[in-house]
Amino acid sequence: EEQLVESGGGSVESGGSLRLSCAASGLFYSRYVWGWFRQAPGKEPEGVAAMDTDGIPAYAESVKGRFTISQDKTDQTVYLQMDRLQPEDTATYYCAAGYRPCYLGWTSVSHFTYWGQGAQVTVSS
Image (cartoon, rainbow, N blue to C red; front, side, top):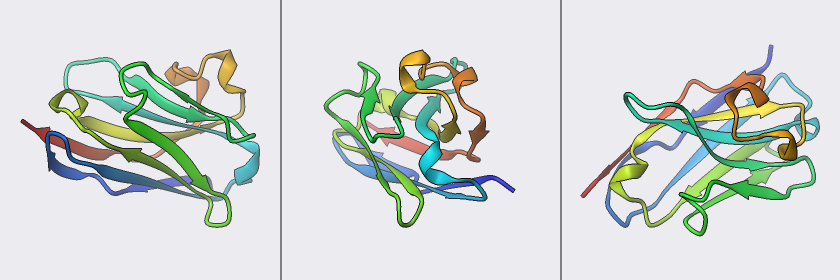
């Protein structure tokens, strides 16, 4: 059974950092494209970052230069390092895995097939 398990959420003050982890199991890790989304209350899901099978990252403009997506293939884990966090980054963050290359539209929820349970990130001013 395919499973994505997230960890690392929490509460920080503005300007602080957090790192989210997404541990994958039950799937052939290296064949997938990986993504991070977030959803704030009352808002649509937003694609934050993604990584193609060749490791090339992509970022939303809202987080470019502050967030970094990375992976550990040995541990089959994807990370989202979030620096210089701002209150507007407050949301539930989800990791996702899909089959199609990023250039086909990674910012869309429908681009991905498997999803984690979500991790809450709260940034106070």
